[in-house]
Picture 1 (spheres, rainbow, N blue to C red):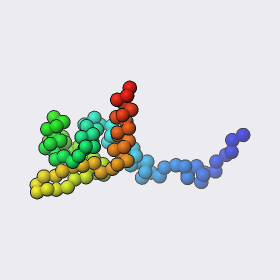
Picture 2: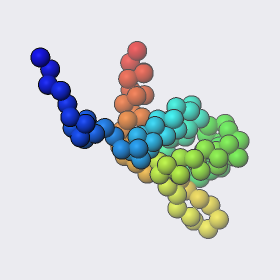
Picture 3: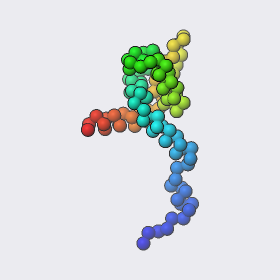
Picture 4: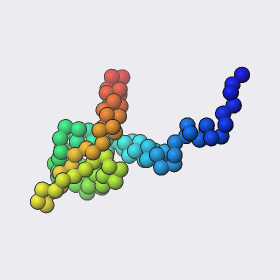
Length: 108
């Protein structure tokens, strides 16, 4: 016979709405091939928007838009040098998840 959980016990096991929303938004963000390509490039080192656009053969406006979305979720950060912004990844946990997913996919 299974023990019946009381409502407060069930609540303890649930995610709060903020955490649930943030996790969902993170996975939605990582679900885009262009953003995956950008983050994968930023695994190695920091790059300017222009360099990211050249390396990935993307429009600069596309890269800027995607970086803005990634920055809003604090997945990337930037530093300014003169008029140039250099982007790098900003969340080891998410980068580890992405690396594991890439590793998993490349072994199938």
